Length: 362
Ligand code: ADP
Image 1 (cartoon, rainbow, N blue to C red):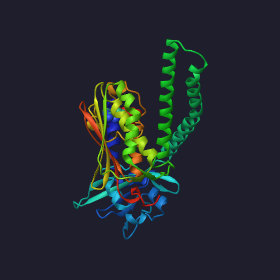
Image 2: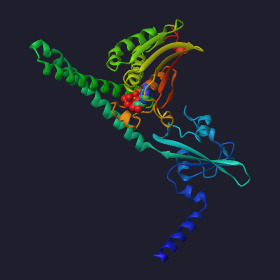
Image 3: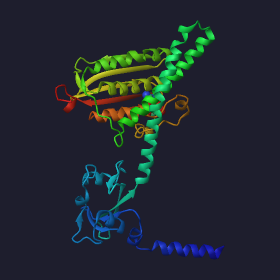
Image 4: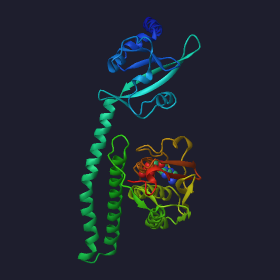
């Protein structure tokens, strides 16, 4: 055993002494060594092949010259050191996820390693999964509509006794739940910034009318939990050129969540106001709140909080992804202020600028 250990130790120490360039030479992923000015001093064989470069570009080539996609400007690359970056670089129909790390050179200057991980395979898998989900969800719509139609008609073909009534109600609730889930999956697929094909249907509409409709639709759900649900609209809210249906869905998700994740007897306040030429929908609750370490990822697809209190509440983890996508498609964003155990405030912001302004065209 001792002998084996020693051999292993020798192998590791010899490995540790391998010049790092040799390792990069054998990597299947494109890799670059860059200087502090982001100039390429070394491109490994995979990078040479993908970008058609010579092994040792002289004089050093500015990385900028390889960047020919809107997502690939130098500012984006520099930002990758702290943020992995969601967007893959596309070359010859392959998708690469860039990663940057800095290292200190012997003369105390900084250099960068830029690694492009080939994620084509994962991308394809995600696409297949999304397409599959879209197809299944779409095909579930008709049977669900039929089921709801027949349940609605049951009382017309004869009297139902009390137990049958109660069962009918439960079937109806399940059908509505399923329909909502199907619609959410379809919305999330349509709005996906990488795969979706949804184009906003802009029209002149009054944002306060959207809020009134959503609040009125959810008054019943709030009453069931004895939650006080209120709406306050500032007189400064102007008509806007926005996608009414999508904005209604986004707001619906936020108010539904505020009700879902608040205890009985809670308070949910919806406010619309204008600040610095931006329209804000604020949805505040005094419910479960969201832990600080989860707040950054909560808007991603499929993310739910893994806490017992949240687990007892049904959901798909798609609602906030839809909200963020709708905001971004309107050049806006969504912000969250939350303290676990005390409550949350979601701010859906739409700039009163560009195409969002009435009269700016569609
Ligand atoms: P869903 O509610 O369908 O799970 P969402 O994307 O709408 O999906 O929300 C993601 C997660 O964020 C939820 O599962 C929940 O844990 C948390 N969350 C959302 N809104 C609130 C809220 N108002 N208060 C507390 N937690 C929330």
